[in-house]
Image 1: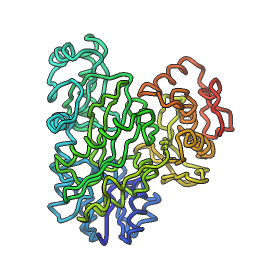
Image 2 (image 1 turned 120 degrees about the horizontal axis):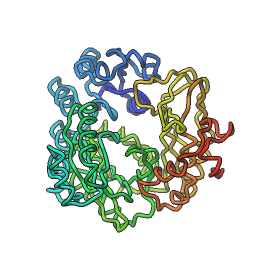
Image 3 (image 1 turned 180 degrees about the vertical axis):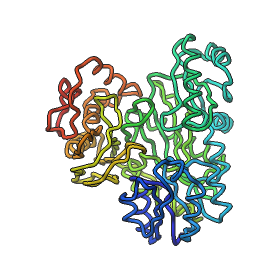
Image 4 (image 1 turned 180 degrees about the horizontal axis):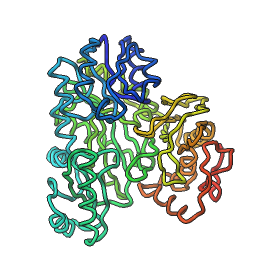
Length: 478
C-alpha cells in the first residue's frame, strides 16, 4: 500500500477519499484553490498545498501544478476523484512519466473510452449492443440530416468529449438539425475544448441503468450490481438507487457480465461504470463508460458492503482483487439524493452563499457525504453539489420512506441559499417512482406539470411554507 496519496479534487469526494486513506493508514495531501482555502478537506488532510486561483483551469485542472504538488510532498500516487482531471488521459500519462501512480485506468484505456465515438465503436467490436448512429464524428449538419433520415427520429447529438449532461441536444424533426448541430458543436468546443459530436437514435421513454465494475491489473474483474439513474434533469442525475427496480434478474445478470467482459477486453484497471439505456422490453444499449469513481458510488457500497475507494487504492497499489463474483451479494435497497445549492423555483439556477445553519439528517442506515458546515461559503464557480444523502433499508419501500424522512430533516439556510431537497421529496412522492415504473422522462413530467404556476418562495426548510410543487402535491411523511 502507498505511504502517501495526493487528492486532486475538492468538495465531498476529496473528503471521502481522505477518509478511506486514513482508515488504511495512508497519509494524505489535499490541494486547494484560493476559493477553497477554508474547505473541510484542507483541515482534514495531513498536508495541504495551494495550487492556484479559483478558476479550475488554473488550479484543479492545472496538470503541472498538481504534479508538482505531488513531487514536493513525496506523494506516491494521485487520486483524481471525479470530474476535473479524473478522465484526462494526458494527466494519467504525465503521472506515469513522473513515477507517480494514477489511481485509475491506464492512459490508453482512458483515451479509448473517454472519446465517446471511439467507445461506441470499441464496445460494439467486443460485443456490447449500441444504439443506431454514427460510427464517428459527424462533420456537417447535412451529414447529420442524412444519417437521421436513415436511423429515424428522434435522434440526439452528443459531444464526443462530453460528460455531466453537457453537449447534448435531442432532434425530433429535420428542421431542427442545423440549429441543434451548431448549438452542440459550439457548446462542446466551449466546455470541453473539443467540437466533435456524433449522432445516436434517441430512446425517449428509457431507463438509465449503470453497472459498477472493478478490475485489477492481473486480469480479474467483477461487477457490483446495477444502479438506476433515471431521475434526471437535462441529462444530469438527481437521484440514484440500487438495485434497479423492476428489472429482471436475468437482464441484470446479463448486463453485469457483459460490462465486466467488455472492461477486461480493453485492459481496464480500477473502479469504473458502464452506462446503458434499457427500453421497455429490457433490451439494453451501451451509452458510455466512466473511467473513474462515480458520484453515486455510495449506493453500491450500501448494498454490497464493499468500500469502492479502498478497492481503488488497493488495485492501484498492485494488489489482486480479493473479491470473486460469488462474493458480491447485494442486500436490501439503497437510494442517494444529490443536494445541490440551486433554486428549483428559478429553473434550478445556482443559489450559493454562506450557510448560517447546516444540519444533516441522522438515524439508522443514513449516510451523508458532504463538505458543508455552518459558516461555510459555497463558491459560485464550482459545481453546486453540497451533499449526498444516502439511505439503506431492507426493501425499496422502506428506503423511500427513510429518504423522505432524511430529506425533511436536512437544514441548509442562509441569505440567498436554496437547495433541491424539497424538490427531491416531490420526486419521491410521484406514483411512477414509487412503483418503480419511471423513466428518464419523470422529472420533465413534473416540471411540465408545474409550468405556468405562480412562483413561490423556494423553502429549504420543509416546515417553512412548502414550495409550489408541494402545495398541490403534498409529500407524504414516513
